Image (tube, rainbow, N blue to C red; front, top):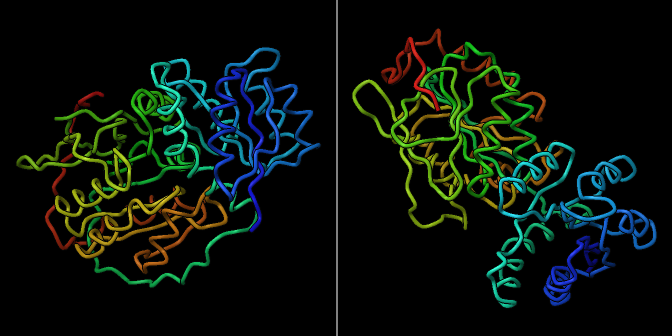
Length: 366
């Protein structure tokens, strides 16, 4: 078995030791080297030839963002996982790192965690990402079955629902700017992220997109041309009230180890909108969204997935495709235009269900 060689970069000797101890216990992984700052890390990369780098953000001499820029210039395909603090500063820096080409991120253990608690945090949150990204780097990927394409019945699309995880912030940053401000239906999104991070993601996407992007809040009315992102640590669902559909939030148990979970949103979307739904599953680790995609298709809706080549990790979209639950598979640079085309074409059709949204003259705000 080919081991995944990892370079650990962090100015904290304690964190380097925690990561080294956890990774050393995994037969699939080898700690190739450690480095206390970005300058030393860049010197070690050609020496140890890692398959993946874990990179702290705040370091002396050369910080994580500057180090990432250098890695992307000289090693554009080398996976990099940022190791950031669960703070406002950490959240903004992490989103900046993702925009610069980081593959993924993990938040650091809390300062209050014991040594055992810190190691468990790393096992649960970092190890799966190293294995997923590292397998792709070393060529160990699973073979997917061809998707079973089904032509859905003619219906008017009243909602777009998107689910994504690893690589999702950048994918959303490419898709949403392709959708015009007069897009005739609302969009709801689950992006696997912790609290605070989703707030800054919504703000960043709002600046990039012609659409109005909000972090979801309970009781807000869905409106065409608006986007709502599930807040970290809350499942997002939809509730119909007369002619309106409202957002609702809950902290029910995680599904697929996730809260928010794509499956939760997709099931709610299928129940609330029936066949009048277009769902998209984009890049992400795991299989969250598979059961929800099945529910949407059983209700008569349609599901697109991102293709393997353009995905950072083809776990979530690949699981949907392998189960025969994908109606179409598109590269990332085609998803936005295909969403617009399909939705606009559907507006001229007589839907199988009654429209549940109405144009409103004023915005409800975030």
